[in-house]
Length: 85
Image (cartoon, rainbow, N blue to C red; front, side, top):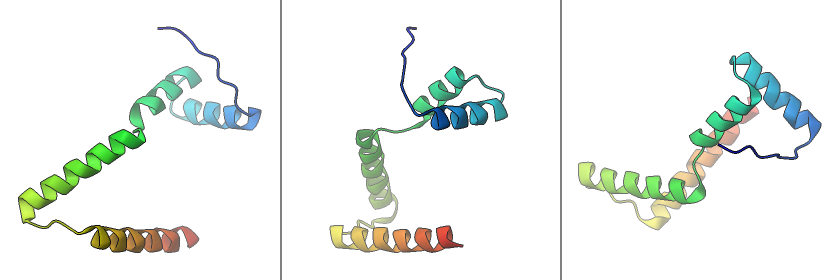
């Protein structure tokens, strides 16, 4: 495995190092684990499509694009309200 140098602000590096240390990991191990756990936009879209297909298969429900937008808006509203608390 080859190493890479990444330039980030010192404050960000220190925060990541503190998060890693709190989990008993080196910064390198923490960043590697973080990179493996995050999805790319394409991976997220693929999983969303799989979820829509499973929902339709299991329940027969296939929301229209307008219904999806309404549901997304409602979720955004609830998340904003929860974050404001």
